[in-house]
Image (cartoon, rainbow, N blue to C red; front, side, top):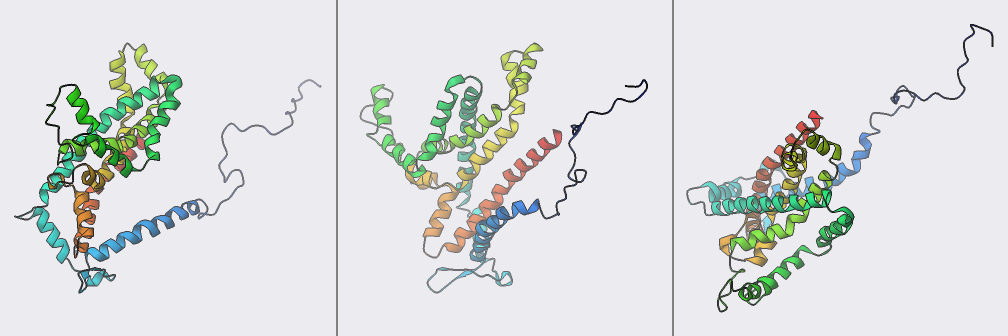
Length: 323
């Protein structure tokens, strides 16, 4: 090759240093292309959420017929506020006999959610960090309760907690309670309802926590130890802050259905002393002439649940902005 002549470039397509955008690569998509992928979910949401919710509004602000059956009013300009004001008076008025039920439900949900978080975090942390080859087996055992109906699992606890059930027999065998005085677990015990909620919903707490803790890079934990932090300090300064989004997600997933739960209380207590909001809605829907009141209670519950949902969405957006 003559001296001073440039070396020819090798044949073949050179790999670009950066990924080309669709405009640079010559691929053009219409503006509706990517949003169209969300259209099935939007239609599904409109059909199965927006329309039923409008039915609830039409019943809550509607009226009743001659036989006291709910008569929905579809035109908003004909809606009445009488049932809404009546329910609000029962909750916030001078003789608000429904107010203790709301307080009781809030206390039950807070305690049950806290127990789910403590137990669920410990289990998820062990599975993600120390289970080793047994991780798959433990995950199968955690998911297996979903294969059984929630109602059947609660009925199993009814048999265990009866006066002559295995729980009382075990306590009597250990001489923790008198032999002739078994504990009446199923007769309006708040602890029974709370533990029933924990048992029913704790898998929903463990799985999100495990999925997030398993994705935390080991190099971050090793960096904390290299800087002289103890295992406990590494957990409090590295693992726990990084797992906050999973904690928020688990609390939302667990606590929201607890507010509307009524099966657990009906099966494990059935007493007015442990009535929750879900029981009020269930009783109103099943009672003669109380359909509009049940619809109003549903709307009030949805408004109350918007507060933790909005806080969760705000925390998630802030976490994404910081990345």
